[in-house]
Length: 146
Image 1 (cartoon, one colour):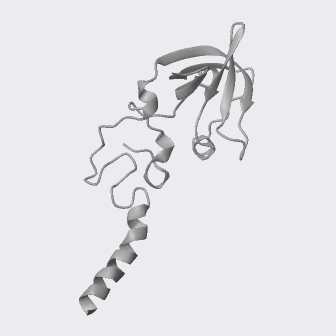
Image 2: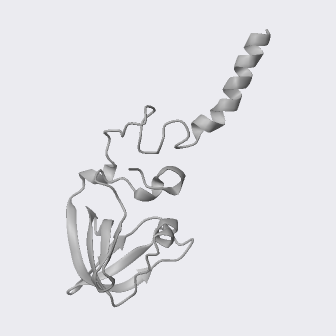
């Protein structure tokens, strides 16, 4: 009877740790043996495009959904979704309307999901996703998976 109670108590205490990403399997991008999984993010199957233009509007506001840029490319404009607001702040990424921008990203309907964004005037490139399309801001303890 005591052995059963001990096993139940041990399972109950370890369950919350196992349910948290990155606790037992390393980082979110790894399996239980801490090897990177071969699975890629669903976006990775979308075509990769390059967008070059001028930032018409910056839509970065806490609590307003995923931050994005409206990039003017000739007569057209494209929404470029960036990623986690927390990640942008941690990386000190602060684009402004009127700046030239180059974006490499996944084409998704009428928008682009950024892989990396370059602000040539600042000589600054922010990488947002890894080679498999996984977001870098979802790494273990706030660090990117490597």
